[in-house]
Image (cartoon, one colour):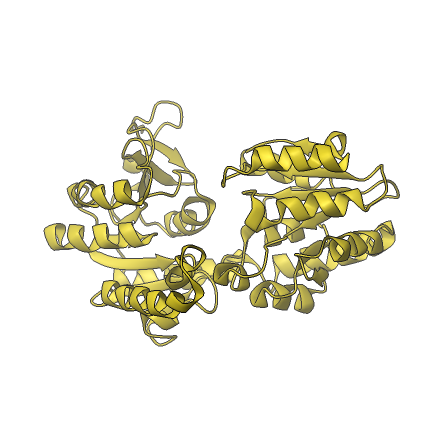
Length: 389
């Protein structure tokens, strides 16, 4: 085995870890395994062998307590490189490396020093950020690389000189883009839902739009606010105009998105990770040919939208501004033009291929010419998880 993708909380089929990074490394000839919460029986996805550690620990205390066990499981696989994806898996990777001699790569998905901001008084936040930044720096010492998913994440790890950007751009799913035609708007939100992601704002904006407008939700509520969302929809008289589809496999979800008209990315202000966001859903919407309504305060999202000309940036806490942007996109010819610009940008300037090449180049330096096993030997049956060939 050459490369172990290690996760303490991400699902087995996580898009960034498996469908993008793992798949790119597997296509380059490396043996790749993703060890994450889930069933223990191995299976193959995108050329990556998925192995489970059992049920995911719930709550931060349980996650801390699970670190030694995760480290033992990682070390037992004897990887050449452990590529870890959350702070607790970073620590598990460092412990495992002491046991098995693996090299360590940290993958930074978000701005961790600000994670405690919502739980602390404003006066204590700088102290907490400083402490968490120091912890990030210490965890990165002695690692072979730090990979960051977006700009603005490298400071706690030593800055650009120590970090490699593998941005969260999206790969082409091979789905035909939207053909925009006149008719009532279908607004769509893809991904995790909750108050901080603008769920209430979506409903209030919907209430300001023509009655035939629909809101399509593809994803789960992750903050326990679904009951409050449903109650607000009923109070506003828009419950029958909301379609909930729950969590879907990516291809099925994107086909549904491509049947809508306008994509919503409504992160709410006041959260540092929202200011620095670079979400999959933005590029997925662009690939589907949809114009995007997005936050004006999210520096990277706003820069992509401006450069690609693929949508309208607004103050996302203001439902009236979201509704006004949707009304401006009622013209199907305008939506088609904006959607075409976005799709072209997502296939070129903001495409995954360049990011994948940067990641593969990193691993050619870390394990030059390494191949964990011949492809015939590492193939697994998707149905049984047993080796075939």
